[in-house]
Structure formats: structure tokens, C-alpha cells
Amino acid sequence: MMLDDFLLRAALAAVGTAVAAGLLGCFVVWRRMAYFGDATAHAAVLGVALALLFGTSITLGVGIIALCMAVLIHSLSGQGVAVDTILGVLAHGALALGLVAVTLVPGQRIDLDAYLFGDVLSVTRGDLAVIWGGGVLLVGVLWWQWSAMLTATLNPDLAHAAGINPRRQQLILTVLVAAVVAVAIKVVGALLITALLIIPAASARSFASTPERMAFFAMAIGALSALGGLRLAVHFDTQVGPSIICVAVLIFAVSRVGKYLPRLPV
Amino acid sequence: MRLIDARHIDFGHGGQRVLQNVSMSLDEGEIVTIVGPNGSGKSTLLRLLIGALKPQKGSVTRASGLRIGYVPQNLHIDPTLPITVARFLNLPKPVPATAATEALRTAGVAGLDRQQMSQLSGGQFQRVLLARAILANPHVLMLDEATQGLDQPGSAAFYRQIAAVRQDLGCAVLMVSHELHVVMSASDRVICLNGHICCEGTPEVVTAAPAYRELFGTGTGGALALYRHEHDHDHGHDHSHHHPEAAE
Image 1 (tube, helix red, strand yellow):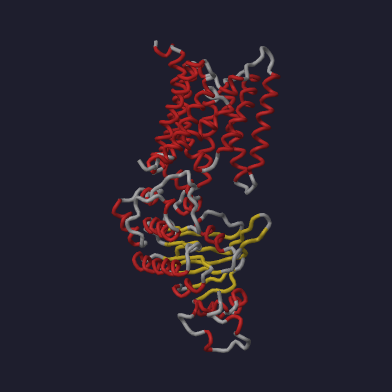
Image 2: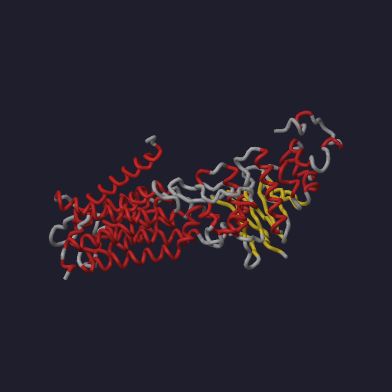
């Protein structure tokens, strides 16, 4: 059976996550939600601790805590509070609490590295089902909400005038970010999830003239980074998650340089 | 037909009362201008009327199925978001390419389809916003300080465009402005706002109203130059520091 090959499973998991994150990442970049993504991702460590304490699945624990965090920030941002500082408090508070809580879990010592930097080489077929199921769901929701989401992203009042509720659109994005965090923790770990969201999207910006093209390029660059990073990790025996991000950063650097190339006199 | 009816609206944020007991309505085909000093709640009122804000007291009723063509004060498009004019015009609903071309021509910016929104000049940008508003085939065009950032000839040209568009579509127009001299001459009705409605009526009535004069002084009387000359009657005080030519 092909899926028995752990490298193939790792590749499928990494590509699935990176494609979903690349697409969602466009909105994170356009709406300047990078810090928000960070806060949600850091809270994931708390989710890991709670999942281990209660003996539930990690994805479920992370998903629930990430969702709570995301919704909390969403409701705070609606009240005109300056969220920047609160985000910082919540993000690092949740991370610290999570790190403390993990050490309190009875039984064998937990390998935290797997949750901070990902452990894609150990994904199971069940993990794959969750990743690809979640990815398809995310693409489906964004496809369905695309125009409304773009309009709300451009300007909330423009959305209102067209009968679209921008708060509702923001809530949908919030939930999707939480879902990506829950899925991506296995692949790149809590500390690098935001990178997987914003770097492919930021690289895609250089090539795109419309939002749709940028989304498409972001997904492609995400997939390329995932495969390249995995290859690199196998070759040099490095950690997969950080290797994926390194490749993404390299593509970003090339895209920035490449942007100026056509203007050079030949 | 009544398009929008606002009754006894109160609105405030952070303990600060912005609007108090404001009632106003907009009928089919009317051109209404809301004027008022900075911080008088003009934009807030407009946002209440489109439903972006909910009044804390009172009610806003919009005719069912009301289509609003909204031109915001200034739309900042994040530089990370690439979008062509053509794509922008197709949000949130796709429109036929011919309609988009036509709307751009009506708004006075034909042929910009393939440009990036971020590369437009201030005047072009506002006209593209206007084109997008037209495409909704609106019952009412709402403009919130739509000429901010344009120079005087630019904003005068923009308002001429609005008048032409309104002739074409027959829609109502509701504008917010502090540029009295340009907007008032074209309005059926002017509402003078400063947290509450100070006075309202035809441009002549409003400019003659004591409440209006208290807010704007007679220095802005140039607004009515199209109607009558400010010096035709005596205000019983010295004109020298607010002579129309000297104003601004």
C-alpha cells in the first residue's frame, strides 16, 4: 500500500497543509492579521497540554483552544479596544501556560519539540484524512464566500452598503485560521504556523495582478515549499517544519528580487 | 417613494454623544446634502443610514430591496492586495464587461479597466468608486466627502459628473460634505448638522438661517454666489473680515 510509505504520507500532509495555509494566508496578509495568527498558534500549545491531560486527540484539543482564542480576539476587536497589546498578552500568556501545563501532564515526559516545530514524519493516515478533509472544507468555504470576503476585506462600509455583514466575514476567517492552526501544528509546529500562512502569500504578491491569481500562486508556492523543505530535511537530516519555512523564505527572497528584474536594462 | 427614513436617532461611542435626536428622510430622486463642521457626526449619520452602525435609540428604515451605491470617504486598499479596476468593479457581484466599460465612461474614466487600483490618481480613484456605485444600478447614490484629496477644480468636475450621473440614472443622491460652495448649489435640500440637526431646507433657506451662520459664519457665503450676491443686503455688521473673495 502506497500510503504506508512514511515519506509519502509526510509529503501529502505537508502539501495539503501548505496549500490550505497559502490560500487562507492571502486574507491574513491583506487584512494584516499576522499577529492574530500568531496569538492563535501560540494558544495551540495550551491546547496540546489540555489534550494530553484529558487524553483526547491533539487535533481536537488544539482546535478547541485555538477556536476559543480566535473568537475571544474577534469579540475584543469589535469593541474598539486597541487589540495590539492584548494580543501580545494573550499570545504569550497562552504559550507560557501551555508550556507549564505540558510539564504537569503525568506519565512519561512529553517531547515538546514535536508540537513547537512539528513532526510531519510521524503523521498517520488518520492525520492525513483530517488535513485533507479540513483543507477541502477551507477551500470550499472560501470559494463560496469569495466575493463577499473580498468586498469586506477592501472596506467594511462598502460591504455594508452591498448588504454584506463584514463582522460575519471576519468571524468566518477567524474560525478558518483556528482550523489551520489545529491542522498545521503537526506539520510545522506552533511557532512556525504564521510563517506558513504569510510567507507564500507575500511571495505570491510579486507575481499577481488580481486577488485570484495571488491566491493561486500562494497555494502553488506553499506546495513547492512543502516538497522542497521535505526534500531538504531528508537530504541534510534537518527538522522538516523549519526546513519548509526556510524554502518558503528563499522563494520569498527570489520573488522580491525577481520583481525588479524585468525593469533592468538588458 | 420614501427610500430611507431615520427617526430620532441617538448615537455615541465611548461615552461621547455624537448624534442626538436626528430625524431625516430621503425620497426618490432627491439630492440632499448634509453639511457640518468636522466632528459634527456627518459620516456617522451616513454609516447609520447604510446600516454599518446601529442607532442606540431611534430607528432607521430602508425601503425593502433598496440598492445603495456607496462612495466612501477614502478607500485605502492595502498594497499587499493586487486588484485591477475591472476586478474591483465586479465586486461583490459580477457584471457584464460592457456594463463595466459603460460605467467607467459614465464616471469619466473610460479605458482604465486593466490598471491596478493602487496606480490611480486621487481623482481617477474616486471616479472608479463612482463607476462601481453606478453599476449597482442604485436607487440612491451616497457620497461621503467623496472629493477629499482633490483640488478645487478637481472636486468641481467631480460634482458635475455626479449631476450628470444623476440625470442618467434618476437616482436620489445623498452627499456629505464640508465644501459648501460646490455642493449646495446642486442640492434640493440641505441638512445642517452639528450633533443634532441645526436647520434644514432649500439651500437659500439654510444659508439664511441663524444656526447655519453661527456654524459657518457668512464667510462661506460664496456657497450661494450662484443664487444671489451676498452684498445685496445688509447684515448690520462689518463685512471686511469675511468678504467672499477673501474667504479661504
